[in-house]
Structure formats: C-alpha cells, structure tokens
Length: 404
Ligand SMILES: C[S@@+](CC[C@H](N)C(=O)[O-])C[C@H]1O[C@@H](n2cnc3c(N)ncnc32)[C@H](O)[C@@H]1O
Image 1 (cartoon, rainbow, N blue to C red):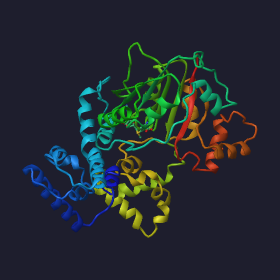
Image 2 (image 1 turned 180 degrees about the vertical axis):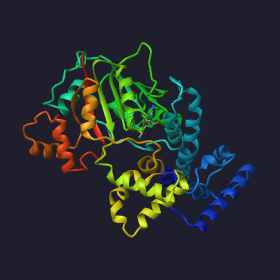
Image 3 (image 1 turned 90 degrees about the vertical axis):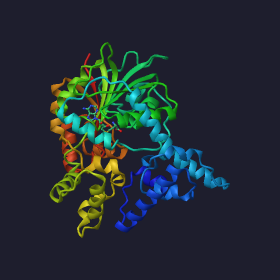
Image 4 (image 1 turned 30 degrees about the horizontal axis):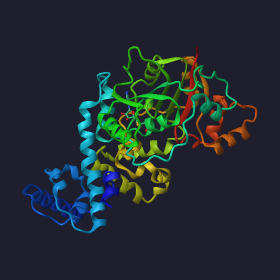
C-alpha cells in the first residue's frame, strides 16, 4: 500500500483525523530515528503510505537498523526503502551531473519548468516489453505502407548509427522506448526539468541502456553546435511552449535534410472534456498544489452530474498527482485543429507521412475515405474528426519529413 501511494504521489483522499494520526506517527518515527532508538518495522510502511520516507530527517540511518527475522517482512521493507529512500537519493545526486545546454529565460518556459520540477511527468515504473529493434526505414514502411516519402539513405545499412533528438523527454519513458525501437539509435534527450531528467537517468541505468545522453535545455533556444539529427521526436511538448511554431521551426533547424520528425499535439476536439474540467477548476479556484488537486478530484467524483466528467474520471492520468496536474492544471496549453496543423506543415515545407493510430481507427477512416490510400489527406481527416471527436484523444501523433 505504501509503495502504491508513493507511486501515485499520495493522491488518495483522507480525513483530517486520519491525517493528524499519520502526522503524529511520522513525528514519533522521526524522533526514534534521530535518537537511534528501535521502532516497529511496520511504522515505516504506515508512515510511507502518507509521506515519502526520504522527507524524514535522519532517514539514512534506517539502513543500519536490525530487521526482524521474518524473511518476507525484510524483503518488503527493503523494497519500500529502495523506492522511498535509495532511489530518490540517487536522483538528487544526479542533479549536479546533467549538463545544461541553454539557460531557461523565457517566461512561459520558466513556469512550465517549475511545474515539471515539482511534478515530473510521467511517473512510471515499468515499460511494456519492447519488440526487436528495427531500422527507421523498416519502421516507417511498416506503419505507413502507402505514404509517399523518401527512405533514409543510410537507414538500412547494417551497423549504421542514427542520431535522434528527443525534445522534451520527460522522465525517460519516451527516450527509453525510442532507444529500444530503432537499430543503431544514438540519443540526445533534452528537457527543462532536472527532476524529470534525473528520474529518466536512473531508469535508463536500470534498463542498462548506454545509448542515451541526457541534458537540460529549452527548445525555444536549443542549439547543439556541430550536431544535427536524423530523427527528432517531441511528443506532448510543443503545445506547452509560448510559441509552438517558433519552437517547431527551431527543432527543424537541427534536423538533417531528409530527416524525420515525430510530434504529438493536443487536439481541440479531443480535449473538450479536459477544457470543461479546466473551466470548472478556474471557477472553483483550485490551485495546482497537492491539497487542492486531491480536493478537486473528490469534488469531481462526487458531483451529482459527474457523468459529464466521465471521460476525465476514467483517464489513466486522473489517478496520479503529477499526471492529474498535467491533465487538468497545466500552466500553459495550446490546442490545435487539423486545418491549423495542415497550415503549419505547409508553412514549414514538410511532407506529412501519417498519423500513429490504432488499426481499428485507420480502418474506419479507410472505409469512410476509400480513395485516400496513403491516409494523409488532412482535409478528410478533419471531416473524420468532426464526425468522431475522440479520434485523437491520445493527441495528434504524426510523422513528417524535411525535404532534401
Ligand atoms: C507531458 S511531458 C511529455 C514527456 C515525454 N515526451 C513523454 O511523452 O513521456 C512534457 C515535457 O516537456 C518538457 N518541456 C516543456 N516545454 C519545454 C521546453 N520549452 N523545452 C524543453 N522541454 C520542455 C516538460 O518539462 C515535460 O517534461
């Protein structure tokens, strides 16, 4: 229970009395730790179900405690201490080791940075097992068999490396998945948030991947002297910038001619429920702090007409603190429509390769627009989306190619 509560960053609601008792147990445990006095081992689990154990002063001394003989109790306690003490300490030490590529001076970037320093996203534990790594050409050919684009000249050569930039890598789920997906991947993963980068670094070491390098930087000003990329991925990021198109353009300046870009942007149509919940939050004045996020969730769940928030209540992100803040309390969010996306793709001179969508959605689209074999006609997709507004609830996730 303590481990689950730590993972969701204590999002579950509690009564005042319950909290007072947890608080008083924490104080007693802290006093025992400070005096080096023995305490019942279950106290660690009870306190760890309400507060992260690393927040207790002198918690490091806990590693020297004599534990009971019960082997299963020891392994449970050690797993809890690894999660709530050792791993957060590892992440803290890592702050000094991550290189900084740009200062963060833009006002919006600073606010976004603050959010993700306090609430790194996503907070994840395990990746689903990845398949075998394949070349970028095989990957794109398989995903978009009828789309018109040029294969990467070195893309199928055995032993060739591909340089990949992950712009806004978050806590590493994204960079690790990409590192495992592409043969020869050599990755630079950048983010504003040191907390996220250190989480990512720890998980990357845990996965034993030597091919990802992490650095702090702002996409608005990012430059990587002497270094360009074959692929740039930025998913769930550009819509949080002060000027998304300027950020997109900046990233393109780092992409080699003929290179590929994978982006994820919020859809205006698919985010109607989130927009409604954001209005509710503004009207009621909840702040983006843990206490208010907890209160807001309880209020949303217990409203008489909670049915209108059904989509929110069943969203995975509703069940974790950092995720819920990202979902409903974000300091900066732009939303797009497909005509706007089409205009940006045109302005930037890019070739649209296709959307990453579940097969059942693309089949439905194919039935609706049988003549569009490549499935790249954004006007048709716009009609399809207006008829099926939840099509892009996982964002507009798509690939484009820079001309050579
Ligand atoms: C919603 S998370 C997505 C993380 C990751 N791409 C994923 O899909 O798991 C957005 C991330 O973008 C980062 N970000 C936002 N604006 C940025 C900027 N201007 N420069 C660099 N990173 C930025 C945030 O710090 C945050 O970690």
